[in-house]
Length: 285
Ligand SMILES: C[S@@+](CC[C@H](N)C(=O)[O-])C[C@H]1O[C@@H](n2cnc3c(N)ncnc32)[C@H](O)[C@@H]1O
Image: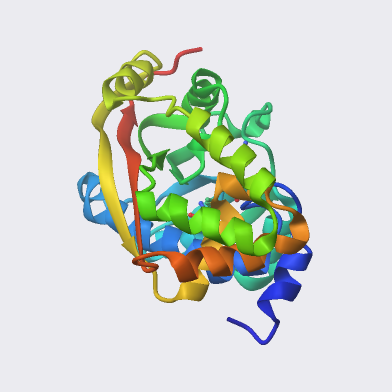
């Protein structure tokens, strides 16, 4: 954590979790995402040729920590085009996680991609972004267009979380302390309605296979992360949790700090992730 106060950091955050407070995200959630990237490399990525000169597209690069980490695993990487829809994240990444091999661009992956990207990349990678995507078919088509044949697609994204009872109790107690019981009830209802789009991996695997890829791995994995500090857990809650859409701006960090203090184990986060490794075998259009 830098010298800035956490409350100052979150003071500038807007209603969308995860995209507006770059410094807080970088200090907390990005560190957890980076560690989850290591799991991807220990699993799916063991079958990727690490000696290939890669031209990589990183979809939803955030503040750039994981993008840099990627190059440690693939040292022969020629270049990375790292895109994110948040200009605040991109500005932060350009300043703090710059590298001569990385070009950061502010781009919404759900919009049309530049024509120059056609068959440009030898790897497309994305870490904890696809759960935000509404139309996976469209995105995967754009990805297919942007990849060379025999290139790797490596993706992991949030599938679901099974909040433990004590997490709900902790949220309720924190809401009482912050005087936001009504907002919290709305948040709990909204989060309960969130059904994972991909209940099991086989439907996602079928979709990818139908779009010019051969699937090497596509599975839902149980994940367990150990946070390094209560601050990391609170910052992650503020910048990533969908609950936070319902918490008033000026109460977010207070709520998250109290929430974490009431958790039985504030250091462990459980969730499920969809993990995909596929190879493009043909162009679809
Ligand atoms: C949980 S963060 C993951 C960031 C980074 N990949 C990492 O591992 O730290 C999710 C990121 O996805 C970005 N994002 C969400 N939807 C996007 C879209 N349609 N196009 C581009 N970026 C998107 C958000 O702005 C945010 O930076």
